Image (cartoon, rainbow, N blue to C red):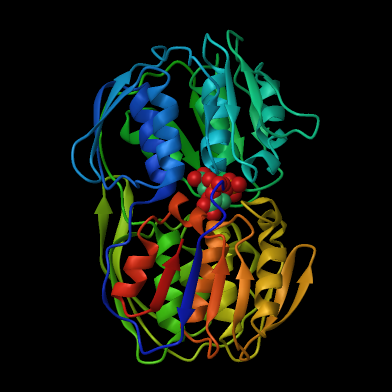
Length: 438
Ligand SMILES: O=C(O)C1=C[C@@H](OP(=O)(O)O)[C@@H](O)[C@H](O)C1
Ligand SMILES: C=C(OP(=O)(O)O)C(=O)O
């Protein structure tokens, strides 16, 4: 992030209580803009996340000639230009901090008649992009990256793409989605098989736009050339964002928090299972469908947590929630062990190293492993931690501040705006003693 100055300070206080509306899902908001842009007709979106990551996606499509009109604070009307209607952007598309934008758009832009350049901030420019550029090249795409395989990416248009079968080495919704989006422009069938389940928002949303996507377990496929018909999209509250108030409430005695209308897509809801294994009391009330996605009102009560060994199969289903889960582990009785989570090292920061450094700084015993971490629960004091350019690290330590006797100061927190712009006021509304200083 470019504004490293602001800090969050949190003091231990009373319980967290009340009802809070968490903002819209980041993954679904990105996809709404992308698919809405490619559709024929006007797509109405409600609950769009006005966070920097999704706004970067919106600006990129506006730069390619797509009109996105605000219809309310979180409502948007996207005037689709059709599968072949995007126009060449005049400049490089700056995707800020957003890996989802860069990886999904690499696929989508590989199918265009024009060339484009994708750039990002310092954190995004360190993240590995060969995981998309290499399989896309197998389809016939031509993407130039730095020698390290990172952004800026130059995507050469006008290539004839050919559908392929892919066996991914890592379960990744971003890679799967990049291939499916390129597949819309490819001759024949693009088929992606993953080693584990990853979030399936792209498949669900493509189906809402009328695309025939066939899903069977860990495998999905589509035939190229299908057109998308505009639709309406209700974006649920983001479970990844909801995890911070959930964890803060779980660890702070006397808490009782309700978060309405949160996405609970099973390909994404590993965090709820892991917290329940740890002894958290979470109720899913009023489970229902919001368009293509399941949602529920979540109620959480404080409880005594205990350490667990996180099952490997749950890791990709909770991949963004580990910073917050490690905070829960720090407050649990006994040891929590996570393995098979090397992907955490290539997110906005190296989340294993960042969490290990921060937890040590506030008095928690941890052992870093190449593919995970072991946390000894029960001994949080407080102190100063760094966000390491990463919104989820910043918010995780803010949640831990709820029970840190000496308080926690988190440095460099402007990045919170990427995914949860009203994080500080929302947590304060629930009773957390939190302040942000510019
Ligand atoms: O497809 C998506 O919207 C996302 C997929 C995940 O990344 P990977 O595909 O790298 O696991 C996740 O970490 C990211 O925040 C959002
Ligand atoms: C990893 C994340 O996002 P992205 O990959 O889109 O930057 C995240 O939000 O935790």
